[in-house]
Image 1 (tube, rainbow, N blue to C red):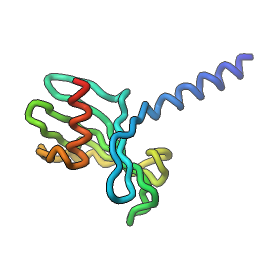
Image 2 (cartoon, rainbow, N blue to C red):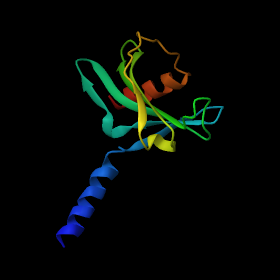
Image 3 (cartoon, helix red, strand yellow):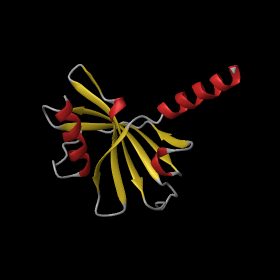
Image 4 (cartoon, rainbow, N blue to C red):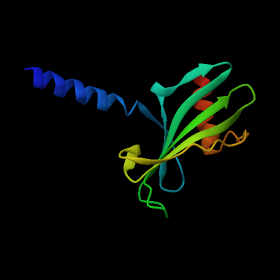
Length: 125
């Protein structure tokens, strides 16, 4: 019985680690973009969130999906990329290559993919 409880508990922990990815937009190419609703937080006037681009086939580096960690400022409609995780498997699964190179502030157009993602997050806050 103890082994069964440990197995169930382990499954629940690993299942929750993927977050709740909500589909936001599909690009003209072969990518679908998601926001991890569980990752949303607001702190000192900024919103922080994970987004993901999930491809239908590997890109030129062999990656199937990329997760992005953003810092956004809704009032000025701008954002920074804080971190990237490149995965060889769909939906960000498996071990990924992490890049913690932060970008400068970007003012996306509302119609761009990152603009649509930021708009969705700002609508929640």
